[in-house]
Image (cartoon, rainbow, N blue to C red; front, side, top):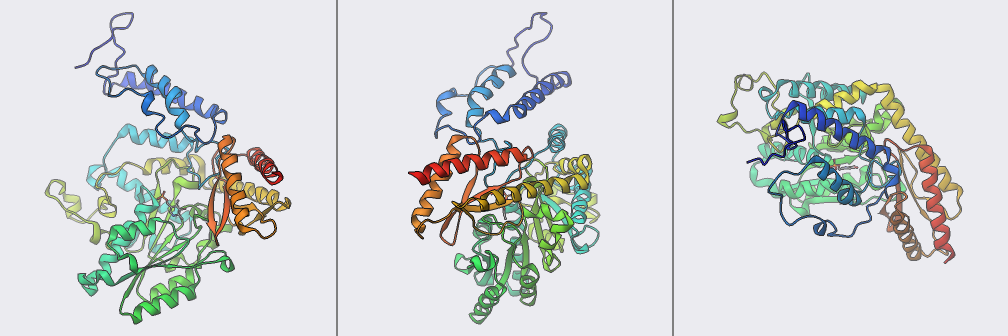
Length: 497
Ligand SMILES: *Cc1c(COP(=O)(O)O)cnc(C)c1O
């Protein structure tokens, strides 16, 4: 039961109704104001949250309120208690990991999707959701100049997954079931997966979930001689050895833009080996895929025609709010044969007659949000040319940062920059690698805990390497230069100790 507080005129009350158009209008406007103010003042917050583990527990009541509170009370708490525990991924001084993008268009699309609040598991459950998704995912395929086989008109097509991790899992399950249909279910323990030691950890998780035996996961070593790209010879050697041992090579994951250092695997050569061994070839371009809408970066996915599936995250670097991971496959039946269910309560004429796509059979969950709306809005409200300029600007800023680093004798660029990530470090003094690693670790900690900017690290050939990834929508040249100044000053201080 609602306990209603009367307002001054006594005719209405302050308690929120579950859904009332006029209240939605009023509070929706207030929430937009709150968010707009957040963005306006985002640079006043420390980028990295400064709270200690468990900070929130003592600030909040032990149990949920019995009676309604006001939106103002909640927003006051957001300011006082939640924002201090937020790390500001949208800050222009956020250079850690890879970015997650958002934009006004993406935000409006998210709002609309929350507003319609549909559940579009099957075509019939909300035809526009499925059909718009088919259209916009085809649009992006064309921006990337993907081969025709990935478009929806034939056996292929694309789908919006929640994350690149889900994408890898669903294609691995599709590939697994496809090979087991021909060799028999008992062969599961013989299936072998190949990737490099730079492949994202989601591949390992997919293997765990798909029942692939851990000792059959070949993590092939890379090094600086190929800038951490997978060598086709390593793959060929591993595959031959496994064949000799009576195992069944079935899945290869190549990466365009590895998470550590944006290494690009040689797709065409890898694809050839995959093909001659009847393996499924998946390409993970979660971050760098977005750059390939620019013709001058398209070369990095040359060879994609040899792949069975390709994935990129529009939520990382294409102005589309999280989450929006685009997965294309050449053979959609591989997905649906592995993932379809057909319970009585979802049966309908369009599905029975095979006239439509039911995206529930292309993904893990049944339910799905109307995510195509935000991508559609991003593509329409910015247009391809602006999206390309957006990418090019970040790459230009990364070049500027790279030049600043290489001009400073205390520092070195560790791997050649390809996209908008710069891998660098304080160079070793007297060849003392251990001391060098410790110095770089201290630098990272000191700079990040200042709250002025946030960047991150990786390990390459046992070296502790600093990662500076540009891609937040608000980042400008001045933020990059200011960040470099902070890093440089802290480094001088550490080196003088
Ligand atoms: C970020 C990233 C992922 C994981 O993406 P999610 O959408 O967060 O699952 C996978 N692979 C690469 C190369 C990435 O950079």
